[in-house]
Amino acid sequence: MEVERDHEFYMREAMREAEIAGSYGEVPIGAVVVRGGEIIARGHNMREMWKDPTAHAELIAIREAARVTGGWRLTGCQLYVTLEPCPMCAGTVLLSRVDEVIIGAMDPKGGAVGSKVNFVETDDWNHRPQVIRGVLAEECGAMLKDFFRRLRRK
Image (cartoon, rainbow, N blue to C red; front, side, top):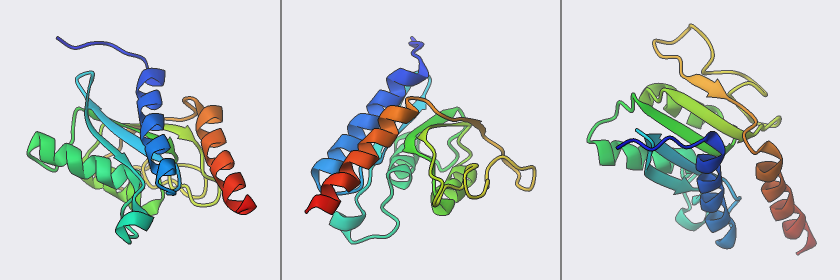
């Protein structure tokens, strides 16, 4: 039975992932992948712990979703992420065929879904996900601002 929930519910789940990242000293960014109203994958930044420049929340969640579904095509899935995806993550969204990307805070310094560039809302590719921006944007942005404020104090 599919349970209908609103975007804020799933974004709060992504925010929980971001909190986990922050507790490890990682930049607090989180993501969840939803299919049929169920969270099938979660991810949070792990770049510092894994010493891996590709260990972004979105990539970790998308990899896990592919494992769970048994395939790389994530049609029928939505990606919720607390910060606008970077170019690498936006490219992965395209390649994985995610149907919809729901973004918390925008990233004017490095976002690739409308802030700096827009890789996904173009007809240049064979896939074009829907994009929803600004879901709990203030709360998502505050997590990042608080993290960097504390980091600067150290």
